Length: 415
Image 1 (cartoon, rainbow, N blue to C red):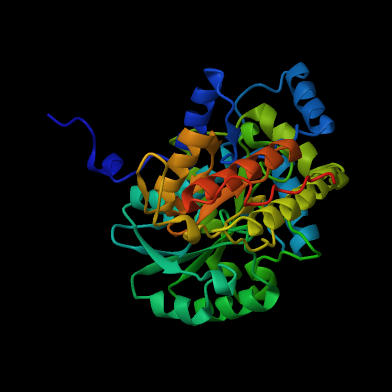
Image 2 (cartoon, helix red, strand yellow):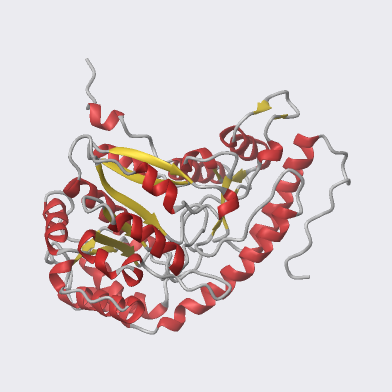
C-alpha cells in the first residue's frame, strides 16, 4: 500500500541541495571537492548583527512572537522599502517569514486554487515550480534567450497569459543567471501585466543589493505604481547580509494577501525565530556599508570567472548584472565522450562527470529549466575559483580530446 500522498509525489528534491549534500559527503571522506553549487555567501555575518542576536539571548528574548513578525523588524522593513525603493507600506502589509522560500510557499498556498496558472520565466530558481505544484497550481514556463540576456520579452509574456493565469514571477537579479531587468524593461513587462486585471505580479528581489558595473536594481512597482494593488514583493536578509542560516525572509503587498500568508504561517511554523528577528533588525536598520567589502569581492570574482570561462574551449559566458552566479553555455562540450566511453548529452551528465572525475560540484542548467548551461556560484574564495577554473579547463581538454598542453592555463587571479 502506497503511504505517500499524490501531492508529495509531484515534488522533486532540490537539485542544488542534493548536489551540496553529495559534495559534503565526498568532502567528509577526505576528497578534495570544490563546491561551486552553494547559493550562499562565504562571508561571515557582520559582527554588529551577531551582537544583536547575542544581546537578544541575554535579554531573554526567546519566547514566541507575533506570527507575522515583531513590530521592530516590520518597522525596519518598512523603512528599507521607503529608503531603497520609495515605496510606502503599513505594518499590516508586511509579514516576516522563515526565509524567503517560505514567503513564496505561503503566497502560493494563499493565492492558488487547483488549475491556476503561474508564469515562471526560464531559467528559474528550482523551487518555484514545485511550490506552485504543492498548491495545486500549474507552472507555465516562458523561455528566455541567452542573446537577450536571459530576460523574457513583453511579447513572450503576453502570449503566455490566459484566463487561468494567477500571477507572474519576476526574479531580478535572477537565480540562476544573474540577469537583471532595467527600468525600461520592467516598465514594458509591467504594462503587459497591467493590461490583464486578473493577473498579479510576484517580485523576488532578494539579490537586489548584489549588482555590478553601476547597475541600479529597481522593483516593479517603483516603475509601474498602478500595479501596487496586484503585486507582492518577496525579500530577505540571507544574501545581502550573509545570513542564510538565520532564516529570515519577508513579504510586502496588499493587506488581504499578506494577512492570508500570515494565516498560512500560523498553521505551519508560526513565527520566525525570535533571536534571528532581532538580528535582522540590526541588519536592516544598522550600517549598510558592511555590504561593500562583500560586493567588492564578488565583483572581482565575477570578472575573473567570466574571463576564465570565456578562455576555455567549448564554453562561453555572459557577465551577469547581479547575484553571485554565472550561467555559462557549455553546448560545445555536449555530444562529446568521456575517457571511459560515456556520451555527454546534457548538462546533467556533464555535471555528474565533473563531480565524479574532477571533484567539481556545480548545478546543471536542466535543474533551472534550460540547457545547455550550468550554474556556477562564485560565492567562494578566489583560490577555490582559480582551482575550479583549472579543473574545468581539464574537463574541456578531456572531452574535446585535445593533447595535454594545447589549452593555455588559466591566468592567475592575482597576477
